[in-house]
Image (cartoon, rainbow, N blue to C red; front, side, top):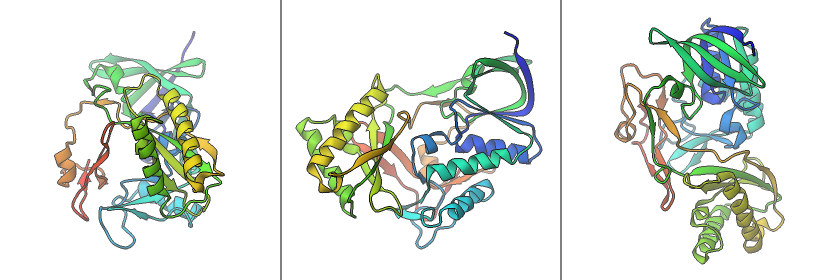
Length: 342
């Protein structure tokens, strides 16, 4: 099969929030950019899960309306979300943290609009890097499969925003990966409608599922399921399930046990008697996979101590978060108002 040849300044693999905004930023700086996304849409797990809240935008433990840590495209996206749905996309307090609620459809449209506005940015969906070749220790060609075709891409710079290092792993670079038994749990999200929830529903869900897990009605990891109401809607919300990384068939496990849990909640809690599934994640999303062993790897101490770097590119204040298969979610926070840099 003959391959078409595509030349670009920047090849970005992964059309989630990070990859899409990296591609837009490169295009705005005058580069010819090729953005390849493995699925049929932009947004990654933020849209496909759907997560419905953006974390890490604001400093820890601040009172009142928090200020954004970063400007640029971050502020532009947040502003567009707020304009699209003012009643939803305003910061809300969750314990010591602030998060930004959003609707997946709004977020996806904003990313699509940003990409379409850049003439020098080309998007290929249903596409993924398959192999690459070197010339004098630099990446020369990247073979990208797209639908039933293959393209030879000749980039000057490559950016891996796939979330699992699928592009840089082709270079033979050293990749960091933990044992599945030690990895934090993945997630699976189900949206329900027709609920009659109140401020205590989250507590009741946690108690009911913990009780069921102790009885042996559901696997123990299902007791970590969290209920989150949908902002500006009194009868809708999300159940976020946890799936151990060591499970051989995670999608099957998630589907079967989410159905068990929902049936159980409908039997035990009046708030869910009339509930029905409105949407479920396409896949189980991994919180931890593999990553490049870079020149420097950010440590736990760097995060909790709010370390700053001379060449820092982005500020973040989200805590160390680990979803343990037995202990559930464990958080280690920064000092109030502090942040670390990447």
